[in-house]
Amino acid sequence: MPPKGNPPVDRKPGPASEGRYSRQTILPSVGPEGQAKWSGAAVLLVGEGVTLQSAAVALASVGVSKLFIVPLGPIDSFSLTSQFPHLQVDVLPEEFEHLPETSASVVLTENRDVRRRFSRWLRHHARPSFFAWPAGSGFALLTARHEGGQCPCLECFEVMNPKAFTKGEASLHRMMGAMAASEALQWISNGKSALEGKVWLTSLETGASFHHDVQPTYKCPARLLEEGAPVTP
Ligand SMILES: [Zn+2]
Image (cartoon, rainbow, N blue to C red; front, side, top):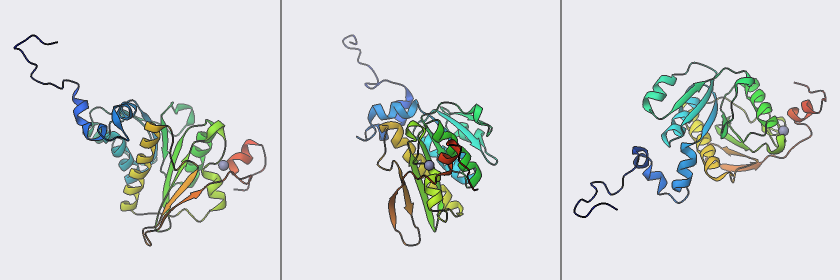
């Protein structure tokens, strides 16, 4: 208790970061607990260009303190850390032995082979993962828990819907990156997502947006490989 006649100048003392995130900590869906989880989170980001940059900014701007980035193209990690001084960025090579423990993994690359390789590794290691890619005139977002190192996974969807993967433009990439980051943040604060095991498809041409359940399939290449069965590429 402060001495009489000497009231504290600031009635709400605390680290500067408390004020910085006050707009989100007052949201019932975030609160101080959610903010603490975001601030303590480390996220793996795999991708390139605008998509990667947009996801990194979305995560850093709510206070995520550590990003492990596997860039599949040039990346300016310096501008990220100068924009967000609290942020630590580790740029990692593609080799899996270097992948650290993280709160969530966000895979945004348009490179099909790289996307599959990461999906298989993340599935095998039971890591909660978020994939986003251009689909039709819009984009798709898959949320996979990979519980017990099992399907459903990205390849369960891909093998049944091979045409649901296209290429997109920068504005779409920016939105995709932000949406995937937003789903990862929800997961970090709640440990779950209404989109778990689903692909969320949004068409910018028609405005249609729907959730599509992804069922585990015996045709999944990741599962077949693990079982030692032959897989046709
Ligand atoms: Zn699968």
